[in-house]
Structures are given as structure tokens and as C-alpha cells.
Length: 183
Image (cartoon, helix red, strand yellow):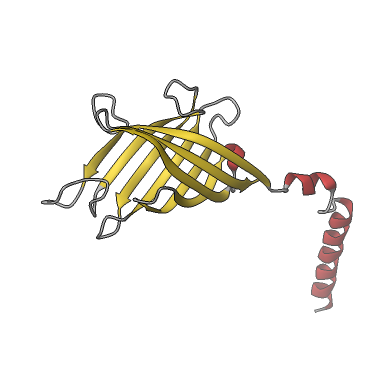
């Protein structure tokens, strides 16, 4: 019994020694773990018709109209994201994901979206957006639930607001404001 107690004390002494040599409260360690806040404004360009469509209805409830405001409709998207509202603005990311109309009255959707950055500053990083969006609100808000690359451990929120919609081309521009905390 005494030998076992001696071994435990030796291990405890070693741990205490290592903590004194490599303190967890060092400035470098502390700075590395400080949360950063990043605020972004991005513009999604969605073409929902034509040969270069960036979103498409893929399924819905048989016998019902498949539309953004019809329960059970599922839409996939791969939209270009630019730094400004003009479609000729520099592309900085892609918005890739799915949204499904999730309420019987068509008032809200469930979205799962990845913002995949392609610009120099955040190239290869992603932000993951998930949650309920009210379809008919002028500004919709949802959660940022994660990220990769420069946005590891991201959490925050995103708001979406339609800036313009061309009914003849089925082309819309949506402003997305994002606030995230990340390491």
C-alpha cells in the first residue's frame, strides 16, 4: 500500500513541476486563446431560373406546388457571394447549402448553409449557418454555428435582407451581415 501511495505522490510532483515550468497563464498562451470578433457584409447572388441557375427546387410534396413558400419544398443552392451588391463586384465566396420550407403555412424555412471563402484573406475557410428563417420578414436572422480555417470554433449570428429582385430573370441579391466570435 505504501508503494502505491509513493507512486501517486511522484506523479503529482511531476505534474506540479511541469505546471511551474510551463505555466498555463503565459501571455502567448493567453493571447492565442483570445476570442476575436469579425463583422462581414456579403452579397449572395441567386439565379433561380435559366441555364446558369445557382439554386434549384429539388423536391416537394407530390400534388402540391413546389415553391419557396410551400411546405415540404427543398431547395439547393450554390450562389456566388461578392463584396458588393453589383454582380460584377469581386467574388469572395460561394454560398452552398439547402433550405427547406418547414412550416405548414410556408412562413418559415430551415436552412443549412456553408459560406466557402475563395478570396485571399479567408481562402479555404468556412462559416456554417443553420437555423430557422422567417420567409416573409424583411430581415431574417439565424445562427452561425461553426467554422473552419480562420473561423475555427465560430459562433454568432447572420442577418439576411433582400436588396433587389428581378422577377423577369428570377435573380435576387441578398445582403448578409455576419457577426462571429472565433479564435
